[in-house]
Image (cartoon, rainbow, N blue to C red; front, side, top):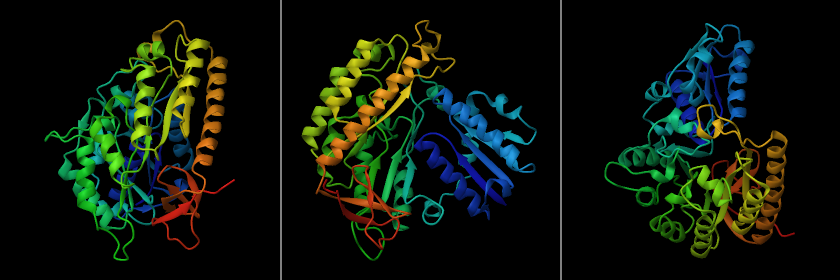
Amino acid sequence: MRFIIVNLGCKVNRVESDAFAAALMARGGVPAAEEEAELVVVNTCTVTGEAEKKTRKAVRHALRANPTARVVVTGCAAALDADAFSSMDPRVEVVPKGELAAAAPNDAALRAGEGFRTRAGVKVQDGCDNACTYCIVHVARGRATSRPADEVAAEVRALVAAGVREVVLTGINLGSYDDDEGLRLAGLLERLLDETRGLGPRSGGPDARFRVSSVEPMDVDDAFVSLLASAEGRVCRHLHLPLQSGSTRVLSEMARPYTAERFCELVDGLYAAVPELSLSTDVIAGFPGETEDDFAATLEAVRRCRFAKIHAFPYSIRTGTPAAARCDQVPAPVKAERARRLRETGRALRSQELARRAGTRELAVVEPGGTALTESYFELPAPEGAPAGSLVEVTFPRG
């Protein structure tokens, strides 16, 4: 069967889509262009209103591109409103993500090599017990669950033995990882470091490393910071740490369980413990009731935290969330302008971080096309002739 996976949304979705593709290939499926596929799987996203629009557009495009293909729709948007997709066309079938995941092969090595990413994602956690007032994902994904450490370790060993040099741990609320034996995220990483030491290609080279995709600030504990500081780069010294707002008042109305000052103090402590650390973040511009003073506090916070990358999003109304029902919505042009200013600030901070690293060396994963992704999450030119997927040392340019 000729198939294509259309992925939308977060890194967890990407990992799940890779598993769907591996399952189909294990059963003789062949990846194909959308207009040639007999099966189109659309893995949907609902994190913002724009994401949901893109999801509906992707399904309609699949129906137009191939008038005979079976179109399977799964993921968060489909979990919230299955009828919206099944009513589009008789060829659309909405399938819960759990049913597709159950079909995925146990042999993780099937996700290594041609057709898959050089940096392999492993989902270790799903769901979220938080209820931020702007977010609908916890409704779509359900309560937080964690995969058993034995299961995670077996998958990781198979990937590393197959040649993967960077494993990205993912989850909807990754920092809440807590398996049945009481192992938290730092403990899981320690086990994975031990079980992959010396494992990999016979040609030798650096041991495989691990990247934490995203972790909430309230889940960064002393054990995790200590591991990050002592792992000598095998746990990448880069964290995606969502801020969302630099105003304590707005954070409270978002139901985020920290103050702006506490967040900044956490970042100060991280830099003190791990001087090489690079940080990225998410910030929402124009949350209901956000004033210019609130937004100014956000700009002050992101500058203090020296984020190397800022993902700035205008607030998006998600029906069914407490924030959507508020009568103090910020006008769309104001939201757009604040998001623009955040992105402008983010570009300036990124340039400063690049300048700070000038002349330093880091291990980087070589990507197809001649680039390499550094430990600190910057793309630099790869050494000539370096094979895709390998870990090589690169130097940050001067000037």
